[in-house]
Image (tube, rainbow, N blue to C red; front, side):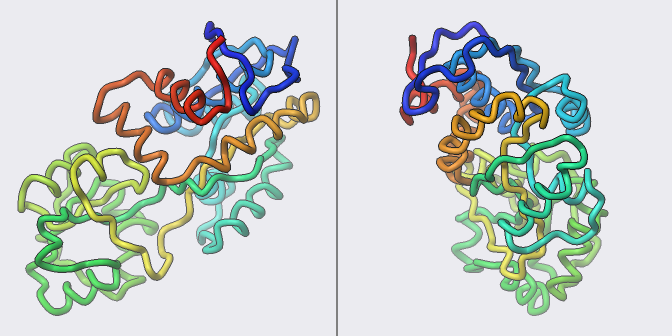
Length: 296
């Protein structure tokens, strides 16, 4: 990273002076933005930073942290608990899930710093226009509508979500709803938002709660009132040997994580996915605006 940035409210005294650190991320907008934030904070704190964000898939970024090829990234508690650590059932309480992940991942040489309230989990959404008719607020409301008027509940989902136990089949079971197979349409994630917003081909669509298109396309996200979907809270993960060498990292990233909410993520993601801005610029502008760092 070639940016000329200096400490704001974090990085005073440049505690990482002389350090050479590598940041990584997965290859979707939100995680790239979060990876850029870590790099910029490290840079302001005096480190030389190598940018290895935008790696394909979750596993390559995860392996980079475990092996020490990368030093830091933002990871999601639900992904770690279910995908990496192999647990079938999520822990409903977000803090308890983070604690369980933190404890169990130590053996893999991964240190979890405190999580943000940013929760990038699955949800169902409906257009505000259509919801004026149905007044749906929760997934229990959807179950009641499906029972009362089965033909009304049409749903657009990704292939994977349609078949996974933590996706549509599990959700139907948890809420006691039965959606007729003919009412389930499978398509790419990006198309779902447009279909729910602009057409009547599906009343409901599978979305991610931090997606910037939710606001941009005027969608209502329905509350998962039975807490079926796992919590995917974003938290910094650090290669443990790096953290042992530079424990100051916690003090640099904790204040940033405390300001990251689902709503903030929606706004930042929209700048990339709706407005076409560069994730690096979006991350930098937000850190400067929040006073964490300053332009040099």
